[in-house]
Image 1 (cartoon, helix red, strand yellow):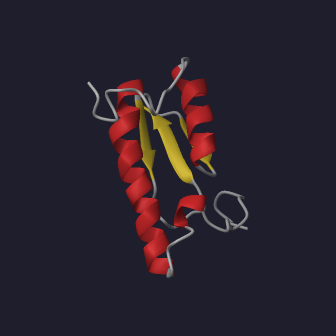
Image 2 (cartoon, rainbow, N blue to C red):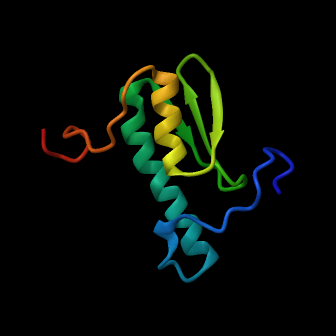
Length: 97
């Protein structure tokens, strides 16, 4: 259990299944955060993955923050705090626009 956030230690995200070492898993976490950092500002949101806590920090431009466990919770919380639907497959993010 993380003493800072209260989340239990996570076994890893499914996208890390092929990562053979802890270094590779950490690199995968940072890569996911990089993608989120490119998508979420369009919805007035920011994301931070420090690697030190077992979660992803999601914040609004006004400073409201939440720590979520995984990508599923990122999308649910993003919709909740932005007040509307958040579509990670929006054509502007996948290069079709």
